[in-house]
Image 1 (tube, rainbow, N blue to C red):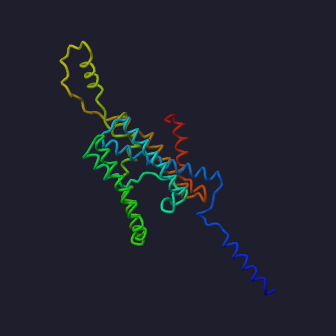
Image 2: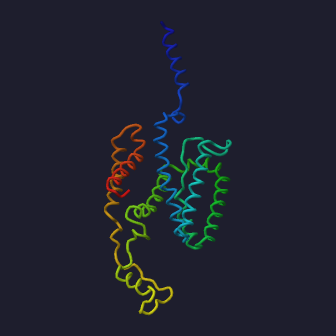
Image 3: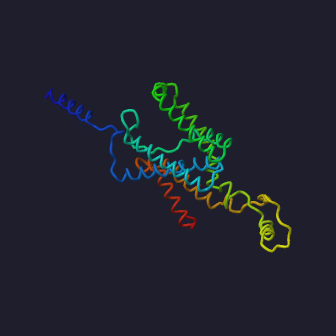
Length: 272
């Protein structure tokens, strides 16, 4: 009888040693698909936002901004493969992660773009990024040994500052972009008609001076439309409620569920 507890303890030890660590567990395909889709959707918003901000600062054309977004997504895919699959023992964490675009470098990139607009500024910006990447790779081993000097209060504060500084981007997405059909102000329709009459062929009015333009003079009724604000509020509240009251896997895909709820509401309202 005295040998039974020892045998039981031995079997428990074997079971514990053979158990798979949660980091190394492979979830069922359904859960992997849901979590992967959530990662892609969350990453995509940030990956598109950064080239839009930088492209506008560089004063690039719409086609050039589209090319910048495509290049950005392509590089995100390459970085994701390297991080997920690994490339030798020096590169890649070999974890199922989705690599996006960091917002920490948006401020210096915009500063460079404002000082050097156009394609030449883009070339200068890309060269700076390549140089910064090479330096980051070189000092990575040193930084890994300094992590103890960066407690959560430090890293959390940095993340909070970055998020707060980028809130205006999300606000513009909800209310309307600074330019285009959802801009805060538009050309007064009366003056727009006058300008069209003046520039029309055969007009008896004097020609318009070269470079003459009318600035936006009236509020745009499409800016800060309550419809878009309402959909955004529904998405935010849905995510918060799911995180608060759901458990387990459902709570882990709260962002995906919130996006899905917002998409259903937008489709029902005919704005999607």
